[in-house]
Length: 297
Image: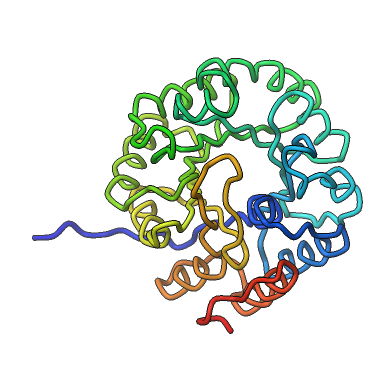
């Protein structure tokens, strides 16, 4: 007899297209174009949005105007706006730009960390203590992301122990919203289910998020298994844009509109209007010179 599957009534989607979607595109959008995308995202019903990152403009020129974007955008009640930050300076910039939430990220892969940051994952997360102190004083919320949690282009398989080391480091800082990120698109459904179950059982106090790239066409299957594991929050990018500039071979994120469609067909409410999400994807694809997936044309 097969085990009964339990499906949630609803799931939450975070739109990361403005950050993870655009950061790997050759076309650099204007603030006006980003504001149009942001308005389209909120109009579709998305209530969690990653608007950009406070990184060095030479490293990620597509995000050089995040400060100005945050000051220019209209904030709607009930919508969570956040940005990715690499360090204390990034947290301070996010605060000065009017954001109440920032996300820190550390790679679980030793090889990835050493190659890109010349540090180990444990040392990197320990180095965020000043970020946590600043956020606490200013009333900001911090979340954390464990990148390369399912595999690394430098290292290959990433032992679960390396993932847990980063998770425990974030927890020591008082950060209890954590994303397990498939940075290189190497995850497979069984791996996602087993890691999800393990993390939820070990750390039930954490609000778990999963972030998938569709490098090998398994992102939707991975989300299905993450739902079975108990995860209820996922990232997506309009039109499936993006990739990681620091992870060779990483292709775009799972498309927000694909996730919405799948969830709704499964009877799981996302609170997002699919037709409006497709219009957002069409707008984004036009801005960067891409062709929208045939199924949504």
